Amino acid sequence: MDEDLMKNYRADFFLEVTEILEKANEDMLKAEMNPKDTSIHNAVFRGIHTVKGGAGMFEMPDVASFTHELEGILNIIRDGIIPLSSALVDVILEGIDHINLMIKDYAADRKATINEALVKKFNAIVEEPHSISEITKDTKKEIAEPDTDPGAEPTTTQPEKEAEIGAQTMRIDESKLEQFTNVVGELLIARNSYDYLLNQIQHGEKNLEEGLKLLKDNLYQLSGLTNEIHHGVMSLRMVAVRGLFSKFNRIVRDISRKQQKPIAMITEGNDIEIDKKIADLLFDPMVHLVRNSCDHGIEPSSVRVKNGKPEQGKVYLKASQEGSMLIIRIIDDGKGMDREKLYNKGIKAGLDIKSPEDDAVLDVIFLPGMSTKEKVTDISGRGVGMDVVKTAIQELGGNIQVKSENGKGSEIMLSIPMRMGINETLIVESCGDPYAIPIDFIAETMKISQKSIRSAGTNHIFHYRGEVIPVLWLNNILKDEEKHKDNLNNDELSLVVLETHDHKYGLIVDQLNRHMEVAIKPLPDNLDSIDVVSGVSIMGDGKVFLVLNPDKFVGA
Image (cartoon, rainbow, N blue to C red; front, side):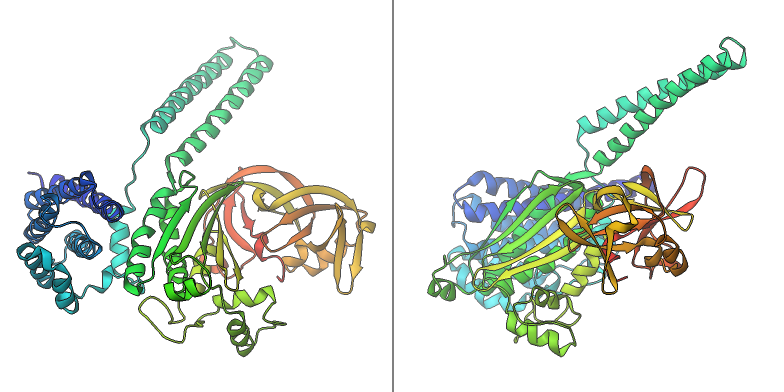
């Protein structure tokens, strides 16, 4: 067989195995909740058997041998020799994790190694199925696979390979593809009409005035189809957030078992769609947040019962949509954050915090090296994570907010754009140069008189719909002080009212131009340190302009 063709088949197999193992993981968690549902047991067995067959065909003897041993455990469950228990689920999940590791090794052209201690455990259970508690206890220390521990700090090599297997391919709803194909067909018809009209004008069959009118109509049609294609391509990239949320069931379950704290994970808004690339990039930050909720937030059962709470703690993952932003809330009903400790840590770090009740005290958790944990575990306490989470969310163009109430729990709210690449913006001018402001931040635009702006010490304020908001000058933010002084003398000013998650304020610009959909590209390296700018784009005339980041205007 052709070598390139075999390579493609192997790549397809790696992707298929990844999906099968993810499904087997989910099914085992369902089986643990419904141990008598034999259809789930059979589904897991079929998946593992498929992996074994494929591994044999693609010359992966280690994978084929190990999956055969795991089938032995699944068979004694299917045959009713032993009922499914949490201890048995632990063993099967260990086996699934190890298959996943070996597949990644083969995908990276590394030598795969069978975990002999795990195989020994499988064989012992098959031979003495009713002694599973003793077997798992005796062999626990022999099994050492840190990469499968949901509490371990993420490494730099393994996640990269995992992303390489799974992130380059995605499944698309056939109806979306069919709709997209129809629009492309209409685009070809519009293009042919354009050629026909040009030909008529060139041969004098249409006079210039009539021809220009028809070309203009054709341009409107092309514009509409271009917008449809844009939205069609964006819809092809969208996936339900359910896929992201489902990955955390295993993490919560394993921490619950490891710390002997009953924890349930509850999800809402599973059908909301998000760009697949954003979903992939959100996983690592959310691992930190979910892990912290389970470890820092949820108390031991004895403490919860003593405080009048249900024995089982709850972690909620809730998704909702606000405009073009996805809102994800990670909520736990645990003990809440220790404001006193955070306050002391913040003061020690030199932050200006008035008291433990100050809302700003919760932002202390984002300081590098920050941890209130007295005991370091493999799940948390090292003081790494939350600053990385904040940076990752901001790099996605999003924001993170924290709420916490002592004794009742905590809430982390992530606000992230649902799509990447193309955004609707308002084009404004400053010092003769165009700049784009994302529409999501704009509450209103208006013309105001210079007299309506008041001075408040060194700041300026404006009365806007019953509230007082601060006023900033874009020229001043961009460090053009002379132009800012010139604007102070204008009788009429162009004002853009902006709303971010933390502030509402007015922005004075030289001129309001027009709305425009723009393809936003990352900043070049020499501009990467300018935090008031989030990207660059290109005008129709080829002129490059900057896309502004209103979140960073206050304090700039």
